Image 1: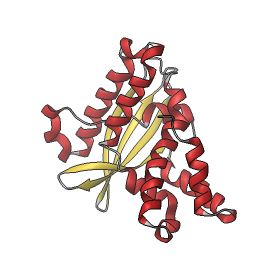
Image 2: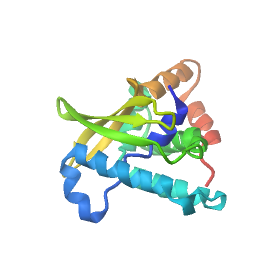
Image 3: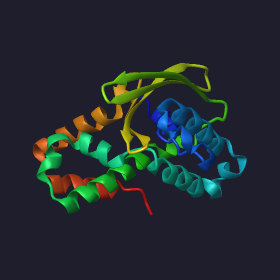
Image 4: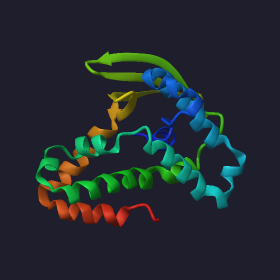
Length: 200
């Protein structure tokens, strides 16, 4: 799994401006418009200044919260263990799961060169889900397949998983959490995630 690619792409699925919200009913249009928005943020010269780093990251995190279904992704990543914990533990785990992703990949966002691009190639139906297929064109002109697994929620769509070259983010974390929980309790997992949480 290429961390630098995840770093650039995890925040590419951004919310549409109010004038484009009608496209929310089309997951492909949503991703296409969202990619343009995200690239705009990442290419903004004012936000590239070192003193603006936290502001840029916060803008991306707030927007990403509106598109990614963190609760669904966290639940899927924890697997069967999610059914064994109480509501308070679930709420904390979802919050820490978001922080885990941000902490793991935020440093790599600084490596964004500005000439990367994302091509939206269409979608495939997966039962009630839709897989939106895109290609990341990197600074070195490599082409990397990226897939967003989208689920309808009311009158919009939200991402419930994300894959790079066929490697699912949810499956990646599910394996990691499962290995840890073989020899540790869920409270120990929470403690580990707390220690890695993004500084507020």
